[in-house]
Length: 102
Image (tube, rainbow, N blue to C red; front, side, top):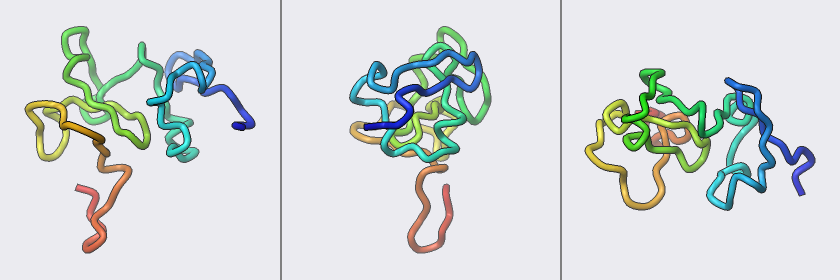
């Protein structure tokens, strides 16, 4: 059982029960930095361009490990559609050969 059942939005400060966020919320994969920088659904922004508009929300993809959001066109390489299956941002993985994150 999680000692702290709440996670707090870094922008608005709202508290959420981690179990209320659903089974797709990657809490068990999030490190301390990801938890401290977590944004609730109302405050989600693209971590690259730091914007989101009402019309842009459908173009955001979420990392399965840290729950950060990114516009499809802001990731490297840019994507035209959300990938099928799990997607991981460059903050959460690195190449085993060269240690590059991109």
